[in-house]
Length: 223
Image (cartoon, rainbow, N blue to C red):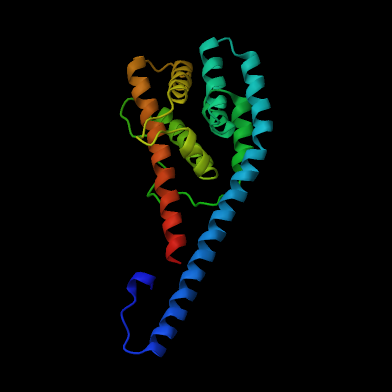
């Protein structure tokens, strides 16, 4: 029951008791909401502390990367304050060292938000790819989702605009990495289609993170 649910009472004593009860309920809800917010800040603070380590892994990747375009895109994403873990997760699709480090990150993360309930782990829905390629993309994209749930506030503030547009350099980076992955697997696809697919994956991941984050905040208010 919230303050808006209270009805006028017939006598002053009843009104006083009702006010005391409503104040207590309100304080209880506020405390629970504040605890949830503090827990979120602590979780994201710990995640931020890992960025230096992850940035070093990304730095090693840049040293061996001959694609200047990819290097520039990664630098722009870091300048945008997009979590290094997300960038690392994207690189994990094509770089074995990034994949190993990203798996460590996921293993270390004490997730504040549970992954959305789904009948399966599919985020990739496309008839463009052979089953084994689709499965690999499913696992990879779900890893991005799992990571994103550990830093939802920062990720939603930096990776996507209020209008729902992906940060351009992040979208382009994801396109290039998926392109490299498909080339490595001998899958031919027009780059315009790769771009559309890459944007779809990021929007699906970020959309689920936003939905889960808002649901969790709503539940904290209702407890």
